[in-house]
Length: 117
Image (cartoon, rainbow, N blue to C red; front, side, top):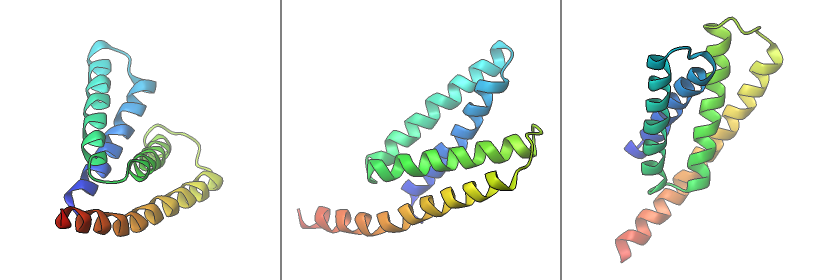
């Protein structure tokens, strides 16, 4: 996996932090941490989108953020565990992994086009 995909996964992890922060922040320090997470999440996402296909980057970012947020809410904050949610998360992750695998072909095509110029 190349470094740019690590940016996407890092931005997704930060998305989980700021989404949870939006719901659970209760003081200035927590809101500041949430705002910083939003800022860095999108800065990293923009950096990744300069190299990878924007649609794929955003879909992976949103999918990872959604899955991570639901799982953290269930595991840490006592959200009720439902098999329907787990099944839908698995379907979402399957789509995210599929997009990443397909975009690998696109990355190679972009790299080859850059070499010929």
